[in-house]
Image (cartoon, rainbow, N blue to C red; front, side, top):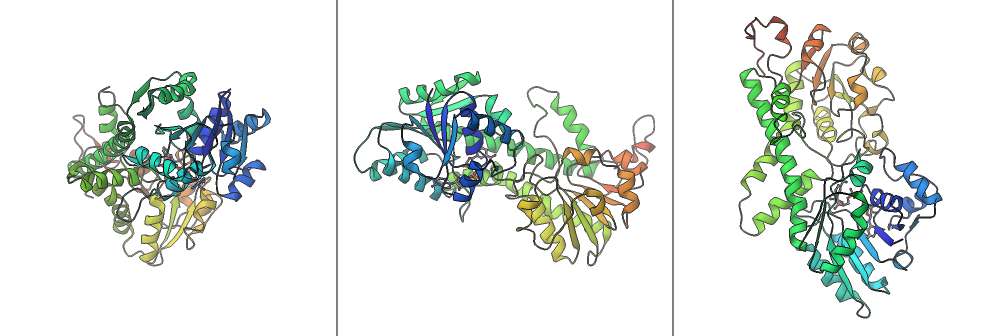
Length: 451
Ligand SMILES: NC(=O)c1ccc[n+]([C@@H]2O[C@H](COP(=O)([O-])OP(=O)(O)OC[C@H]3O[C@@H](n4cnc5c(N)ncnc54)[C@H](O)[C@@H]3O)[C@@H](O)[C@H]2O)c1
């Protein structure tokens, strides 16, 4: 049984801690946020993540998982310490490393025995070396340690499955023995393990996120072109996705990416490139396309409703994606701000994110069910593709609205069905927008919708 200390009990840290405990290790999860730690000790989850509560309870009961705010306690007897603190965007788009620096310093001041410091936070290339310098500088007396980069690839909403069945584990270190010891911890996951140097491992994380963000912006660009030419981007994506070289994932046209990772990581990679005199043309285009999606949504609602002042608009979904309560860089924030600025009354319903959203959206009225929210609305906007929205009784929704107008920011509904139901329906890149009903045998539509 190995002993591991995990620093940070946010989306990555608490999932990693619970999963490592479930793999049979003794894990101490540490955070400087006392409320979070006290809550965990009482069985309250700091975040919403499906399956997390049961996993934590099981491992706490088995004596493999505990919580602390004390570095001394967390490091006492630990062979590994994982850093999983936040690395938000700084002023110019660079990663803000202040939490990593504080954690490194606390490790240095409290370690009593040799330690393997594993960086799980997404950090700029070169941070591993920098962390080693901080530790060396702040150790009261020299104690050997090694730094290993182990970037995390889990997705919120399916984090436990992603942690337990990763596509690969990436490890980077200048100390082969330390990397090998961290590899041993990951062997039960039975995934390929890529061992490389520190900087390359750090780069793999940024390159992976930037590639996925590029796929999203790519399909959004294709959606724009589909609209101009009368093709349906959903079917285009399906047709593309069967090609194994392309793959079907991350080809969903819509409101674009948000959340705590893609926006900041693409920005940080572009910053790193620019800082070294490189011109990150593709990354800049990816960000520009993504930035357009939210204002585009508001403009389309304006096209559908005219002047928004006094109009009641309901948001279906608030979190940046389904199965999480994470509101970081959620499109719902930008969209509701813009609607409110245009004089609209904005309401919202989300299955789990309303508590997290309330302080961020004080002028948005929250409803505890989607039907009550729709009543009297002039338009609805699908902001988050929660499964429960796919199963809504849309006839009931339509009958309760002042005007049956729906803008589908995630393309979850079928334009043909929506048209049959009597909705004025728009999505992103949906071609003839439901007029497939009037397709002639050659598949050429009689009328085109102009966006
Ligand atoms: N959220 C994701 O889906 C995801 C996926 C892959 C990688 N990542 C990366 O993982 C890292 C963590 O992300 P997150 O979303 O879990 O962050 P988070 O903001 O949810 O959690 C960070 C936690 O660290 C704690 N913390 C900050 N400074 C500390 C310190 N000095 N000592 C102890 N605890 C401290 C905070 O109190 C907080 O609880 C980031 O670098 C992120 O880019 C995130």
